[in-house]
Amino acid sequence: EKNGFDHFMLKEIYEQPKAITDTYRGRMLVEQGLIKMAGVDDNLEKFLNAKRIVIVACGTSWHAGLVAEYIFEDLARIPVEVEYASEFRYRNPVIDKDDVLIAISQSGETADTMAAIKLAKQKGAFVFGVCNVVGSSISRETHAGAYTHAGPEIGVASTKAFTTQITVLSLIALKLAKAKGTINNTDFHYYLQELEIIPDKITKALESNEHIKAVAEKYKESANFLYLGRGFNFPVALEGALKLKEISYIHAEGYPAAEMKHGPIALIDEQMPVVVIATKKGHYDKVVSNIQEIKSRKGKIIGIVTEGDENVRELADYVIEIPDSTEAFTPLLTTIPLQLLSYHIAVMLGKNVDQPRNLAKSVTVE
Ligand code: F6R
Image (tube, rainbow, N blue to C red):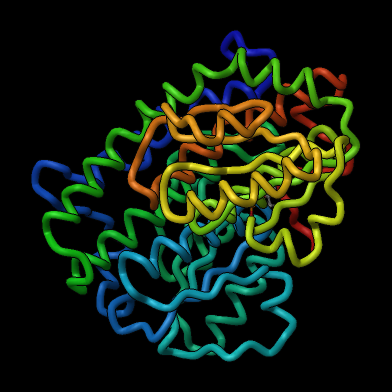
């Protein structure tokens, strides 16, 4: 059932082009310029009248929420807050009927996320679920929702759930942006076309697998890793670090690149690999200066770059290329090499990739 792959995690990484296609199939009608999602259509007024959207989740799903914050605010101009469900539930949150709460959960069973939903419902908020497991507790407790349709995720480290969560949330953001008129028809069409070809671009990104193995071989003995990204790719840096921690047990931290100089730069020496997401978008020039700062302190640089990039290639020890895309969707691509890097390091270190120590696939106790 691993379909020829050594581990479920690797199989699930490779399933992402199909999983994302399954997520948008039947919902995104590119020719007609339409996004159909029953859970959103039936509650459109609630979304459009929302003063803000509060997203609650844990772990990787929380990282998907952070990516969604950038996408919702950029496209639909709705204020978004993203909270750890475990913090939200215990801090007497300010939330009421004018808020929409989106709960994200692969398993649909996470205890803290469930408790956050119940609290938000008590306070009158409209609660929308983004789950993968059909019929799960969270999908039943929410007022409405949208499944990710990623198929079963067996590996404890979440991979295809993350990218399909971002896909669902992007569809919702685009739908609201169109309804609110915060993007024009031309741009709306452009985004649909860009999202439609993401699966092919992921297939392309997966072709770097052998090269990524060489990078893994080079740095697998490191005691620490830093991951840096900005804008839409800041949450991807957090997710890259989490993936490495979970399955290889190497200490890793993710940071917004510009925060480096406020502390973490003190950690940089010749022993420190720094994975920098430096796609040719947004804050590219600023990220390149961060790379120069790391280099002058002898840190090792692994750049995740847009194909054809020359600047970062000159500075970095290794670069891993991903296809170009519109900035909002780059997280769906930059995530891929980070998943593969963690996977190969963990395998090389002889760790139990699919069932890392101390972790469970669904966290049903707080
Ligand atoms: C990371 C991971 C966990 C989960 C978290 C939330 O690889 O698996 O961090 O993302 O426990 O789980 P769900 O999404 O099922 O609520």
